Length: 190
Image (cartoon, rainbow, N blue to C red; front, side, top):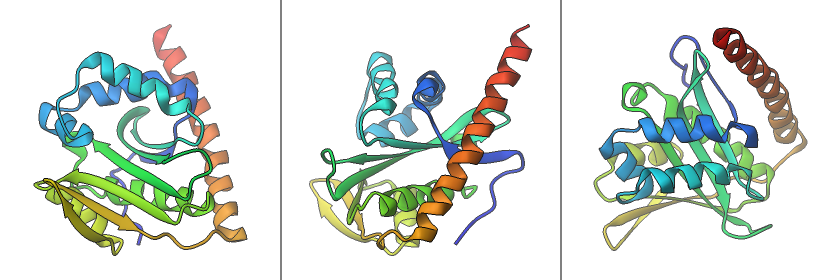
């Protein structure tokens, strides 16, 4: 299951030095998308603090970049250090929703969860968030309704040498791509 990204788009890990790009992406979310991402209203200061947390132990954030600008993101956050349970959260700017971005981001999150020994991946969303529910259903999640929100649990398979090699290869490409993006920003700034 691998949808095509919009032309010029790539998905790669975000590195701790890219917290500002993550913050800028989250700040660009329209009010409804921001509310859905954080299950409620949050201010710009909260967003800035949250974006800085991409360097926290165990956190893995994948981003959808289009022409060097972060337009979507997926987070994998363990419940505790070395825990086998984790939470996944997604944000995609309105213009790029319903273009397969969420599907590809979830594929990357599932690979990262698998390679970290996560056996229960939880995706929480508001009960009226049909897009998120459809995304989870693509990956055979079962839903429980709990106080107005929907919790999807996905049990990723165990890691293998091939799954580890796939993530490492993607990381190498991601580092190279991040360096090219940084160099392009420097050239544009001159």
